[in-house]
Image 1 (cartoon, rainbow, N blue to C red):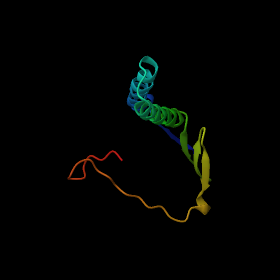
Image 2: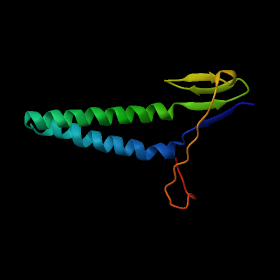
Image 3: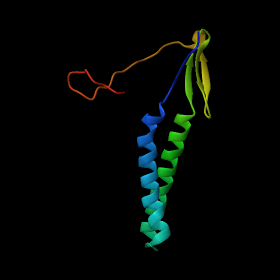
Image 4: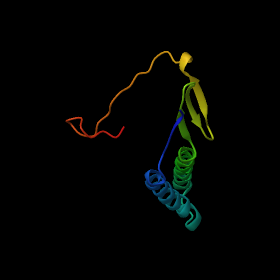
Length: 106
């Protein structure tokens, strides 16, 4: 039995909104005004970072994690697979957003 997990579209909507807003502000300022060279360079680097952020969100949207008898696989643009017999150890950490460890999201 294969189990497939993926991000819900709604879960990525905020990432898309943040990326689009950041890209609109940084690239928009580069297009609309003629900033000083240092400011233009900083805005260009900011736009590049927001473009990478948007690209990572797209990759997350099209990637699914599959678990089956053979192993664990990420199917998508940057997919990979690990067979169960090749897996030597797993280290799991729990990061909570509340002091009493009741409501973590990581």
